[in-house]
Image 1 (spheres, rainbow, N blue to C red):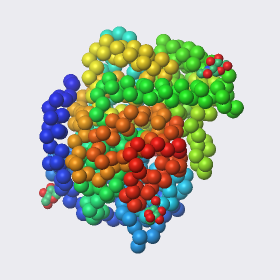
Image 2 (image 1 turned 45 degrees about the vertical axis):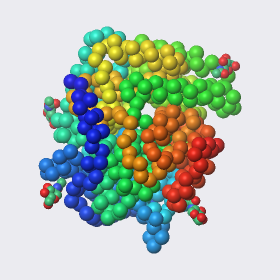
Image 3 (image 1 turned 60 degrees about the vertical axis):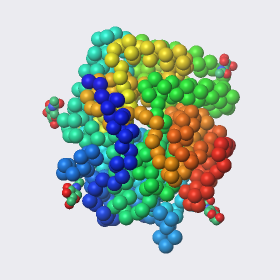
Image 4 (image 1 turned 60 degrees about the horizontal axis):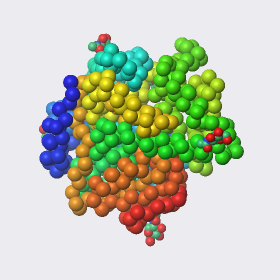
Length: 500
Ligand SMILES: *[C@@H]1O[C@H](CO)[C@@H](O)[C@H](O)[C@H]1NC(C)=O
Ligand SMILES: *[C@@H]1O[C@H](CO)[C@@H](O)[C@H](O)[C@H]1NC(C)=O
Ligand SMILES: *[C@@H]1O[C@H](CO)[C@@H](O)[C@H](O)[C@H]1NC(C)=O
Ligand SMILES: *[C@@H]1O[C@H](CO)[C@@H](O)[C@H](O)[C@H]1NC(C)=O
Ligand SMILES: *[C@@H]1O[C@H](CO)[C@@H](O)[C@H](O)[C@H]1NC(C)=O
C-alpha cells in the first residue's frame, strides 16, 4: 500500500540530468482568439499544447492538452522574452490569473510589460484536460482527525475509494499530475515557443514547480522568481512543524493587531480564549450551519475543526487589500468578523463549499499533494500522535493546516509518489534564482525559504517585513527588486531585508 519510497528516491537522485528534453513533437503553437470576452478585452490570445500523459513513457501514444493564454509584451520590438507564470494552489488556474493581471484586477508592474506573460493551466487544472472525481464522495469525506482504529480504517478506505473514483472517471492522468510532470510540460512549452531559455515566476505552490524545473532543466531558464516558498526537502513531520509554527506566529500577530485596531470588531475581547472554546467544540463534534441544509445552498451544513483552521489560515494571507484591488477580498478585518459571528454561534463563514460536479476544482490540491509528499501514517496512533504534537506546538491554531491534511487525507493513497521530498540536486552553473518571502507568512513560513535558498546555488533571498502570503502583489520595495532582476538580471545584496 505504501509507495516504495527508497526505490523512487534513488532513481530520482541518480538521474536528474538524464531527463533533459524528451520528445514532445509539438514545435509550434497556434495563437488564436481566447474563449472568454474578458481575455479578448484585455488583449490576450490563447493556444493549446499537446504533451504526453506520462513523461516516463512519452511515446506510448497517450497525450493530454494543456491550455494557455498570453499577454503579449507591450512593444514586441523590445520584447525581453517569455515569462511563464504559476499562481500556486496546487490547481489554481494560471489563465484566470493572467486575465486578472491584464485587466488590472491584480498588481502586475509596468516594468514587466517587456515580457510575453504566459499563464499555462497545469495538467488537470483550469482549461487543460481535467481531472474528474466523484463529487458525492468528496462531499461525504470524513474528518481529518481520528480517535479510534476504526476511524482510521474508515479514513483509509475512504481515501482509496475517492482516489479510485478519480481514476475511474479520469484515467491514468490522476497518477501523473505530480510537480515534475508539470515542470516537463513547461519545458515542452519552451520548445514549442522556439525559445532557448524561458523566464519563470511562481507563487506559493508555484515555487515548487520552479524548483522542479531548476532541477530538471538547469540550463533552460534565464531568470526565475520564487515568491512564498515551499521547501520540498521536508519530510512528513518537519513539514507539519514548519507550517504549524509559521501559522501560529501570524495568528499571534493577528490577535495583537486586532486588539489595537480601531475597526477590528473583536478589539478589546479575549480572542484566544473564545477561539480555543470554538476549536474545542468543533473537535468534539461538528458545528451546525442550518442555512446549508437548504438543497440549493452550495455549502456543507457541518463545520469541523479543519474547516475553521483552514479558513483562518487562508484569510490570514491578506492583512489588507492593496489599493486598486477588489476590496471584497477577505482580509484580517474580514477574519475578525467571521470569528465574531462564530463566537455567537453562526459558523456559516467556515462552512465548506461543496463540489457541484465531477470537474470541481476543490480536490486538485489534494490530488497533487498526495503524489508529491510522503504520507506514511499506518495506524490511528500515527495520526493521533501528530495531532497531540500540533496541538501542543501550536496551541492557538492547533497547527492543523495543509501539511497535516496530506498526512491524513492521503493515508492509504493507492498511487505511487513519483517524486518524494528530497534536497534539490541542481547543477552549479544554474542561473541565480531570486527568492522572496514575507517574514510572517501563514502558509509558507520564512524558514522554508531559507531552507530552499541553501539548495539553489547562487540564489538570493529577499526578506519582506510584512504579514501575508506572497509579496509581489503589495507593489513595494520587494516588487521593485524583483522587477530589476527579471528585466536587468540585477541581483540584490545577500540577506536584503525590506519593509514592503
Ligand atoms: C514523436 O515522434 C516520434 C518520431 O516520429 C514518434 O516515434 C513518437 O511516437 C512521437 N511521440 C509522441 C509523444 O507523439
Ligand atoms: C466508474 O464510473 C462509472 C460512471 O462513469 C460508474 O457507473 C461506476 O460505478 C464507477 N466504478 C467504480 C468502481 O467506481
Ligand atoms: C486583548 O484585550 C483584552 C481586553 O483588554 C485582553 O483581555 C486580552 O488579553 C488582550 N489580548 C492580547 C493578545 O493582547
Ligand atoms: C461545475 O461546477 C462549477 C461550479 O461549482 C461550474 O463553474 C462549472 O461550470 C461546472 N462545470 C460543468 C461542466 O458543469
Ligand atoms: C534596468 O536598467 C535600466 C538601465 O540601468 C534602468 O533604466 C531600468 O530602470 C532598469 N529596470 C528595472 C525594472 O529596474
